[in-house]
Figure 1: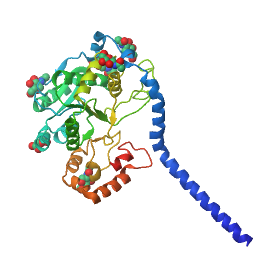
Figure 2: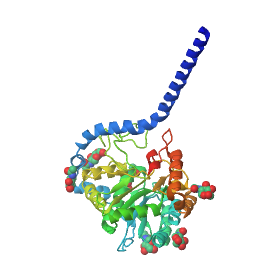
Figure 3: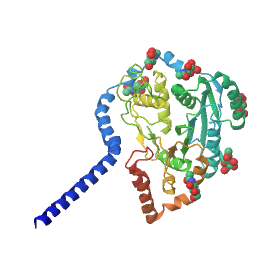
Length: 379
Ligand SMILES: *[C@@H]1O[C@H](CO)[C@@H](O)[C@H](O)[C@H]1NC(C)=O
Ligand SMILES: *[C@@H]1O[C@H](CO)[C@@H](O)[C@H](O)[C@H]1NC(C)=O
Ligand SMILES: *[C@@H]1O[C@H](CO)[C@@H](O)[C@H](O)[C@H]1NC(C)=O
Ligand SMILES: *[C@@H]1O[C@H](CO)[C@@H](O)[C@H](O)[C@H]1NC(C)=O
Ligand SMILES: *[C@@H]1O[C@H](CO)[C@@H](O)[C@H](O)[C@H]1NC(C)=O
Ligand SMILES: *[C@@H]1O[C@H](CO)[C@@H](O)[C@H](O)[C@H]1NC(C)=O
């Protein structure tokens, strides 16, 4: 009898132990996700109060003459009439650099093919590449000749005479919004994107058409970074000094990999940029400061990806807007993602159920992988 009891207790304890382990491991597995969402939200809400009291109008405001120095660069290649069409739905600037000719070629043949978009989607989208000068003087001359040739055949390069480096990305942003203001202020939407991004143009166009019919204003979508702190580690690419940015959090912003704003926001950001100190070289944060100075904040669209690549699947293609880090696979992805089969997969009740399950499996991972959030599975 004693013996049996003892064994029962042992068994019960074993069950307890196993349950505890299971619960703990689930908690640990989910911790990173929790940390990424709950904790950062708490941080962000508590700091939001402080940040809302930062008036970027005063803190970064400089005179117009001083501000002009940041944007006062000569055009080396320009196309003043590129946007002359009356009805432009979207002006899309791709941030490229002189040597990335293959990336530009891939974009022109896939999601950035203006002719294809016009024919199949019935809207005008302009895709332009924003460039500076190659930093290496020895290479520059040759690359410049190549660019002029590329310009002759494609007429979609916009280049100014600043040095094209990571730390000059804010200058490249000023090029984009300055060009938009001067030559394309009638485009209904403006988008800025990296040259290693994939844009699901049919999905994006449908979405923007809907927004346009509603007559949206103060529209700014992308992935949203809320309450992100400046990186103070000197060895980081994103290092920002106290002097350059004294606060402990950035305003909400959308990472530069890809975001879209409406015409009125583009215009307001341009106005703000004319009196703000653009020495902060993180371009997307600078954009956030400009917008914040004008009282505009971004809205999250879950199908704009973070740093990571979206999983390959029809159920994902059906809703994706952007996905980051595509170079070699861009042709194949474009072919698959625009296949008419994609829309059939998720149609009907069973299709929707199937796609929800697939998306849960693909997106609701216990670790952080920075593509679309788990909640995207339920939309
Ligand atoms: C763009 O699309 C059009 C129409 O579908 C096609 O004829 C053309 O070859 C494409 N351009 C490129 C560079 O692939
Ligand atoms: C770029 O190409 C256009 C059209 O082919 C041409 O008119 C223009 O002069 C070129 N720009 C430069 C800087 O060569
Ligand atoms: C940015 O461009 C300007 C103008 O060409 C140049 O003087 C400066 O050195 C560049 N800055 C960086 C960090 O490359
Ligand atoms: C802009 O900010 C930088 C610090 O990031 C500062 O050194 C510079 O003097 C400021 N420019 C003006 C015109 O105030
Ligand atoms: C900042 O300045 C702009 C124009 O200079 C003004 O329209 C805007 O309302 C100001 N924003 C804040 C928050 O003071
Ligand atoms: C495209 O579709 C083919 C055939 O279904 C598949 O083998 C391939 O992995 C897909 N590639 C991508 C990028 O979706």
